[in-house]
Length: 197
Image (cartoon, rainbow, N blue to C red; front, side, top):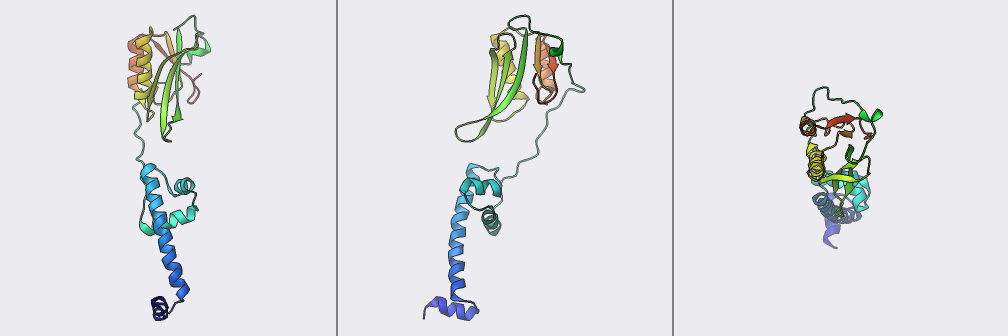
């Protein structure tokens, strides 16, 4: 008689249950290692995204995370940029059209994926007459610094425009961005949030 049979009889459970528990523990330990590796690569993932990433059932991932006390990294609440009070500038594009190269620029940003799968943000400034990108910036977060970098890149290689247009995102309505635009004598023009034109 083997040790498992004796142990099962003493505990009052079937030998099969002991075997299942042992195998289940090994599977859980292996799953734990996979989850921890996924969290090192993607600290912000919750159990659903980890399950999708690993190709494992999300209930199993959640159970193993609870069993071993694994908690994903929690993102802190976003710190919002200080906005210029009542900084809703008129949409000058409703009445103005570019008269030549460099007259009116428009700025916006978007997110793109790097080859490691991390998000990065690209801000661009477009000359509305020539359709040429006159300034750009890439950062790992969208912030006033992202759009300021694009603005600085543009005005260091081109004369400042008469008008710079954007949406009303917090990056564009920040006091720093507004001050930089006005410093070179350009006018701010803004449309509805999320719509750069």
